[in-house]
Length: 216
Ligand code: DX5
Ligand code: ZN
Image 1 (cartoon, rainbow, N blue to C red):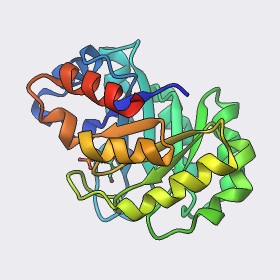
Image 2: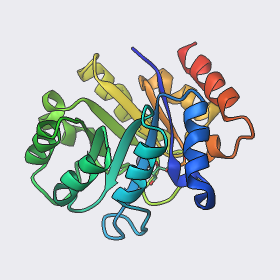
Image 3: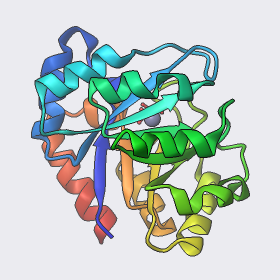
C-alpha cells in the first residue's frame, strides 16, 4: 500500500501561515492535513474554509485533506469543497445522517473518509466500510495538538486492516518517528503529524525518515 505522510497545519506558526504551507509542501509530504474544530464537537476552535482556500492558493498542487471535527459536518460540506478541500473526513460520532454526508462528499467530486474517536468501538464503522475512501483512527482525543499517543487505539487499525485489506487507514494524534512505526506495524498506511513535523528545523529530513521507517 502507498505510504502517505500528512503534516497537520494546526501546529504551524499562524503568524506565517503561507510560509508554513510552503514549508510543508517542500518537505515532500503527500498531503496537508487541515483540522476544523467547532467548539462543540471538540472543546476548541481552529479555523474555517478561508484557511483551506489559503492553502489552495498558496500551494495549488499540494493535496488538501480536511478533517471536520464538527457536530454538524453535513452543513459545511459545500463551503469546504468550494474552498478547495480534496478529501473531507467526518466523524462517525457526528450528529447527522452519516451515510448521506459521505455520499454528498462524493457527489461534490471529493474523496470521503470516516473518523473514529478513541472511545468508540470499531464495530461502529462497519456500516460504512463499503462507502468510504479511507478510515481515520484517532490516536488522541481530538481537540488539541501536542497530546500523547494512545497506543490502545491501534487495535482498531489492525481490525480495519483485517476487515478491509485495501482500505487506506490513517492515524492522527501524537504521531512521531516512534509511534508512526507502531501504527505502521498495526496496519496504518497514512500518518498525520502536527507538532512533531512542524517543530523540525528540517521538515523534509523528518518526512523522509518517517516514510522510510514506516515502510521498513
Ligand atoms: C487533533 C487533530 C490532529 C492534531 C495532531 O485534534 O485532529 O490532527 O493536529 O497534532 P499532533 O500531531 O501534534 O498530535
Ligand atoms: Zn486531524
